[in-house]
Length: 143
Image (cartoon, rainbow, N blue to C red; front, side, top):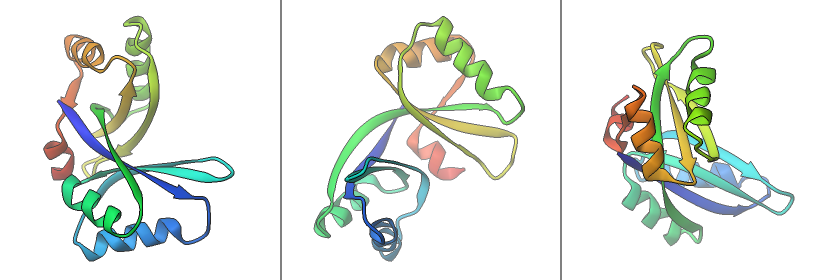
């Protein structure tokens, strides 16, 4: 139930994000979720896309440094306190979150939280045991 995520390292300068998204769009690659973290010199763009291998090849061919990491996509109720509830479970299960980001699907009934945990297998087992739905990459792309 892990989802492959693309991590792109890019220098922190104007136009780089636009360039990446244009290259992916030109190859008909759909971005389902993304987050950007930056420092003074560089940024890390993390993407969930509908065709990981094609996106990786496209970006590498255009000179970008690209890596693939695994994350977990957790479906939560899109309501006040939904995030607090899952974070309480994570705390109770003693799971360490390396990073996270979120998106809301079109129905408005659920949100999807993307997590990178220190112990991925333990996180999957704990979240499923406590009633959370873990989505596959295919399920995310169909939202």
